[in-house]
Length: 78
Length: 167
Image 1 (cartoon, rainbow over the protein chains, first blue to last red):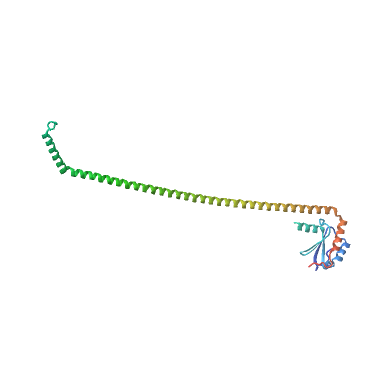
Image 2 (image 1 turned 180 degrees about the vertical axis):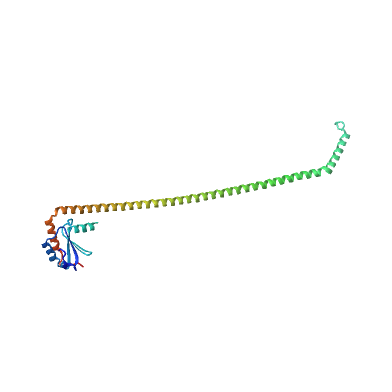
């Protein structure tokens, strides 16, 4: 998921994970989210992120982390 | 008459004297004297009439005084009662106003207490939730190792609906 010259015209998608993704894990992402191939993926590491990952495309955020769920729960309770 | 000790000449002279006196009295004194007596009598009667009228007037004045006094007393009583009634009404109004103000103050205080209570409850609730969140995050970050993180990423990918796409 490193930037390459062929990806210059593609939109950026930030994939935030708690650790660097292996090649197998990258493939898993493409398997379950095939539309990610249309984006230039940048893997950002956030060690504070707990359980899962976050995908950011422009202003859209797809939060599939435990941390996100906990934050949502906290927000609803408040 | 001499045997009785009466002097006839002297007696006759005295009779003549008396007649002369009577004549003179009647001629010159009796009329004015009687007139004087009549005037005196008339004057006395007028005095009595005046006194009688004065007495009647005095009684009338006394009656009028009593009436005026009675009226004045009644008027004073009426004014006093009116004043008492006004004071009573005023006091009632003041009391009602004070009671209303006290009730308003009490309601405001209760409302303020309720608001503060709600705010404190909200703050406590917020604090508990945030503390719980911090604890959960801390525990999770300590419990979840790299292998488990990997599993969680995989599980999250598996749970994603197939048709999920960005807009």
